[in-house]
Image (cartoon, rainbow, N blue to C red):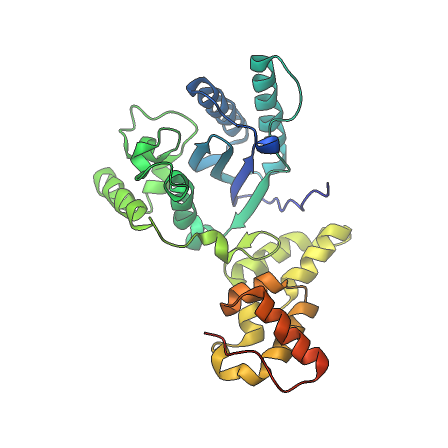
Length: 294
C-alpha cells in the first residue's frame, strides 16, 4: 500500500481519521473509549498537541489537532501502536486494529477550524445514530459545553471557545448554536483539494513554501506540481453555464491537469458520465455537446 505524503510543519492543524480494519470495531465499550482517549491524551501531552474536537464511532474515529512542533506522523505512530497493543491484549489476539494508513486533512484554521470541529461532533447525527450531538457520549461535544472543572483530556476546549465569545457563558452558548446550525448542512470535506488540503490559495502557497525544501523527494515533487496547477474554478470560470460551448475543451484541460471525472463532475454539478461525454466531444472534434450544466 502506498502511503500518502505527510505534510508536517510547525503549528499545522489537521483533521485526522481512520476506521477499523476490515470493518471491525475501533471501540466496543466505555473502557475502550477511556483507553483510546487516555492514550491520545498522553501523546498530546508529550508533544504539546492541541486537540480541539474528537469523536468516536464504533468503527471510526476522528479528531482535529494542532501540532506546534510539526510532529503529526511521530505522534500518530505512538498512538496507533499503543492502542493496537491495548485492544490485542484485551482480546487475546494479534493483528491490525485500524484500516490505515490514517488520513489527515491539512486545514487553514482561520477559515476551517470551526466548520471542521462541527463536522467531527456531528458525525453521529450525520450517520443517523442519534438526533442531536448531546445524545452521543463518545465525542467532545458534551465536554466542550461542560464546566472546566469536569472536562477531561484530551481537549483544548478553551482554545476553541475563545473564537466564539468574550466570556465562557457566551462562548458556550454560541458554540451550541453553531453546532446545531450545522445539522443537515454539507460537509466541509467536499471542499478538500488534492492532496488533502482545505484552505484558500494563500494558504496553499504557504504549504507550498514548506514543501519546497523537500522538492527532491519524488512524492513531494508530485504534490508541488499538483498544488501549482490552476483550480477547477480558474479552469471553468465563475459562470460555467455561459461558457457551455467551451466546456469540452475545458474538461479536457482539467483531465490533462490530473483532475478526475468525479472531481470535475462535482464542481460542475453533474454526473461524471456527463463529464465523460464532454471529454469525448472534445476528442472527437464534434460541435454537439451534452445538455447544459445546471
